[in-house]
Amino acid sequence: MYQRYIKRLLDFVLSLVAVIVLAIPMGIIAIWIKSDSPGPVFFKQRRVGRGKKHFNILKFRTMRGDTPHDVPTHLLKNADSY
Image (cartoon, rainbow, N blue to C red; front, side, top):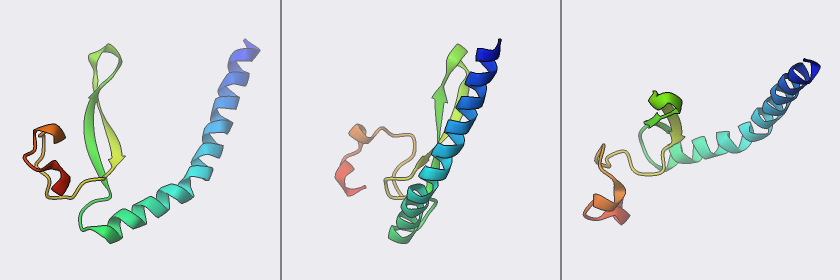
């Protein structure tokens, strides 16, 4: 029983440390994306999780904002231009 609470506390503390440590690089990446091109910094992608339930995940945008939506990159005519 105590191991369960200790694991929960350890998970919480390590997650908090990770958020604090990674906040600076993520902020730099967000500023870099925003200064490089217009549009949002993040995009939302739909994924399938446990029990085949759908959920949305936020990701940093790595392609231009005018890229066609819902088209896989390998099906674009000139994927390198995006």
